[in-house]
Length: 130
Image 1 (tube, helix red, strand yellow):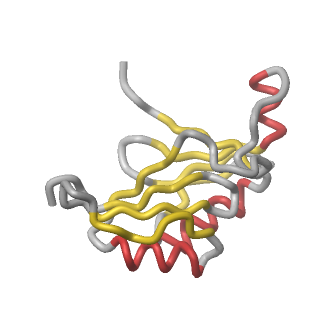
Image 2 (tube, one colour; image 1 turned 180 degrees about the vertical axis):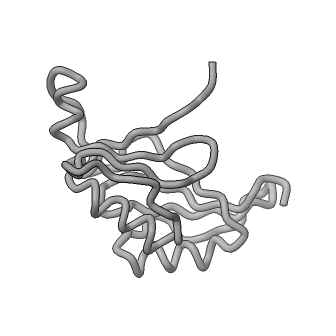
Image 3 (cartoon, rainbow, N blue to C red; image 1 turned 45 degrees about the vertical axis):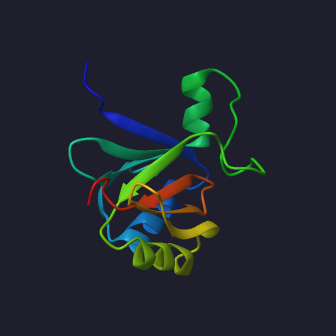
């Protein structure tokens, strides 16, 4: 077994990809002509986005949408960086909402939390043990 994808269902796939491109300088791997599915070039594991319409088709019904939930869902995407403060500020400048400002954890890791415009909870953190 190998972890291959994280797919986030969002209202606007193109906008979700653009946020990650602008906020974190990630590169778009591709987007379908219908703009209902797209991926970022993030290395071996794929970070991707699909439209709510595609999600409802795939799941044969309803699910909890991150963008429509008042509170963040109980799952996050962690993005590892050497400069959490810079990444945090860039995310907010690009439209994210601050949930927790950067702070040092007792084990030496710097961590912050933001919620991107698609409603997805993001942890921005330094590598553990760095």
